[in-house]
Image (cartoon, rainbow, N blue to C red; front, side, top):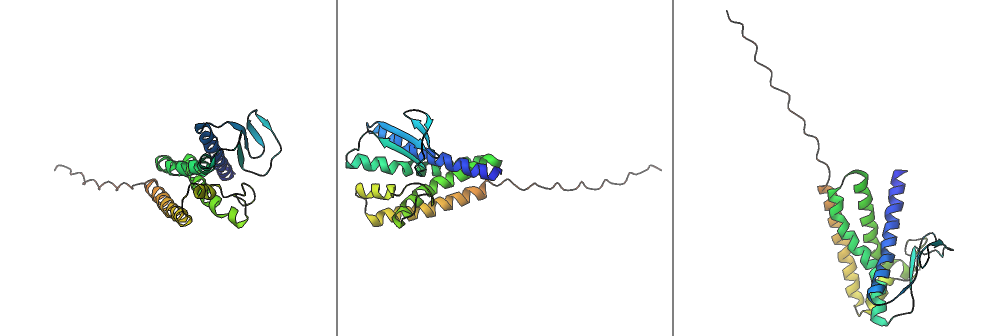
Length: 196
């Protein structure tokens, strides 16, 4: 049961940070957040309330659509934020122990896979998180709007997959608790000599 709770909360934090990335980018670009909603229909902005859930993991709506490049950055920085957090989480995995370590490792992995799944699944007609989430490949579409070549984008994705998983594996191996060192048994005491 604890493992399920760790998985669900680490995924939810990943989805929340994805939407925070969209909202923060929108604000930095001078836009206004019209609505901020998370699964299962919790609206955080403009008022905190439950609304009808539309099947998305989260949504940030802008007051109005922005020009091309700004719109591209807005779309890119949802998965871009989680990508950054995936790598920032790795040192924390190494420095923590127990359930906290497992939770941070799960969060980091979900963050790393956010951009991958969002790039691959929607073009195949599958939602971002298989049964729910976005239908549009936000990071891929944004990269094209920013005039990144298609082949270049997929090279970046391949490098991310290999590099992240190599680091993740290395961190997990290096941060294992050391095996207990067995103490050597004390040397037998010399027999007491009785003076004659």
